[in-house]
Image (tube, rainbow, N blue to C red; front, side):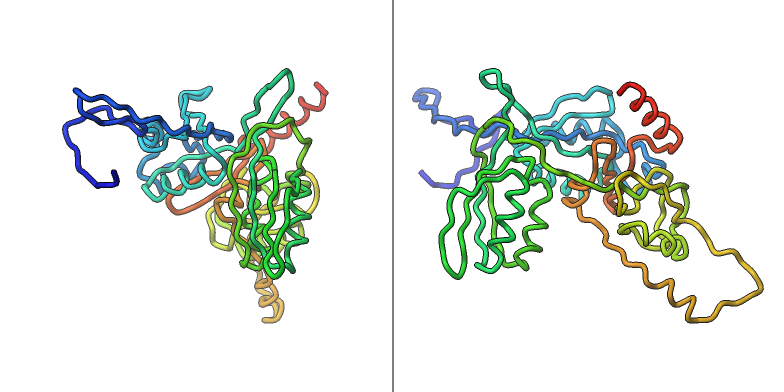
Length: 337
């Protein structure tokens, strides 16, 4: 036991199988693997910029890559989606699926994904959700901030021990951990250590605030300008920089108020024979931009939004790119309500 050996000529061998002498069969017990708790929809990229940066962009490429992942990842589940160009992917958490997304984009795949959603179960007639046991090792000075943030995410503190560094143990819903890892590192000044394992299913713990503000949505296709971004920055936080290609329906920032705001970041300054002072021109450099990482983007997008993933870019967008079509859909929704 423990020796490293090499085998060849055996087909259809998967994780969990036992290879032994046909004359002396002793199968080893299979180690139980936790069930998936989070699902996302992977689909073919249909944005105006589709096919510009990726090598593998078709549904055939996407399907083959996802089903090939099943050969090495036993905790992953893949099934065909509602349309021929989409696939439902189930994993053991947001981090699990984020690693798959990052690996695929590094391999040249281009696709789009939906917001992660947890998988609910009905147990004894009651809706239950997956719960994670979260362990956090943080300096004493930052323990209060961690406890407060986990409490907002419907987590319950189970134990607390230590003096200079405090070890905290929580039971928190899986959906409460979406996007929390980056927030945790900020709150602990990079000194915190956290890990989470699946605990089980418990009754639904109530709503968790996701996003109280809307998105800044691009009005037209073109190239973002410094002048256009400067005129928009007062309306929220920007995610893009000047000279970045954008398209209508693409999300370029976070609004500072509820509801989406359509903005024109491609606006250019009217050319005249009157030259402004250099001080007025220099003031346009005050635009502050905070590009989002993959995990932050997955946390930010809402139910009517998608994340476009390419080997070079991460772009958040509306499912329906047309502003007029979105307004008509919102009007119909109000009438039905």
